[in-house]
Every structure is written in C-alpha cells, then in structure tokens.
Length: 187
Image: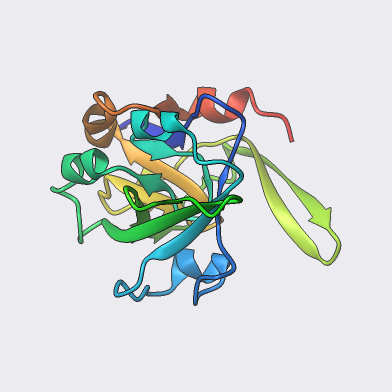
C-alpha cells in the first residue's frame, strides 16, 4: 500500500494567518464550494515580519497560503487536484503582502478507515468535532489522488510520496507520515 503523509506548515513564531471575514465566502464554504478567482482571498495576521519571504507555506486557519515557488512545484497537479488563488495578507498596522496564493485542494474523500483509526468526538456547544489520534486511510476510497483533503476533517491535507518529494526543496513544509502526524498530538 502506498504511504500517505499529512501536509503541514511551520513558521519561526507561534502564529496563524487567518482567513478573513472580509472574504465573500465564509471560512467553511471556502473548502467545499467553488471560489471566484477574480478577487484575492484576504488573510489577517498580527504582524507581517521580514521572515515571511523565507517560507513557501504558512500556517493558516483557512486554505493554506503558499509561495509562487510552491505554485511552480505543483504545476503538474494544478487545476486537476489543486487551485491557486491570489491572496492578500494584512496585518494590524495595515501593511499588506501580495506574494502568496491560497491553495484550494479540489478532491475530498470520506476515506478514514474507522476500524483501524483511533478517533473520538468532542462537543463544542451544539457542534460535535471529530478528533483524530491515529489516522489510517482506506486507499481504495481515494481514487489514485496524489493530494486530497479528508471529507471528515476538511482542513487536513493528505499527500502521497510523489507530492512529498515535490515538497522537499520547499521551506516551511512538513510532510509527516500519518502515524507521526497524529500519534503525538493531544486534543
């Protein structure tokens, strides 16, 4: 069976670039509904620092933010498995960065092997959220995709070895084997 990895990002400080309420589509709809690519997607952060140019992917709440080098590396799967939308990042001082793209993963699969994965559910008010301790993918449900998100947990992006190899020269990108990605997390 082909190994899968979780695509993740790290940054030199503990911060997230947050999908803005200024966007036409709400946060959750950005993962599942078609996006208008005419206008940029807006993100917010406390401070735009100089280190931002040293990263090819940024930690986000929302669609991942990626550099033009990342876009170039992913040209082979662009428009088939991922879509890149120009992004605008604004900080609390009003400074703006236009150098990143939001990456929308186009394929989503309900592919968690619930018999072999270790999951639980946490309640937040009226909402119930799936918590993953150990993730096993049912490869028969991913239709040979090289990059996809989990239907059960949309913000989680899963990649195969080919995509992991494309990520090797990129800065700030982590592609962790699923047992490492989820095995050490605590919720």
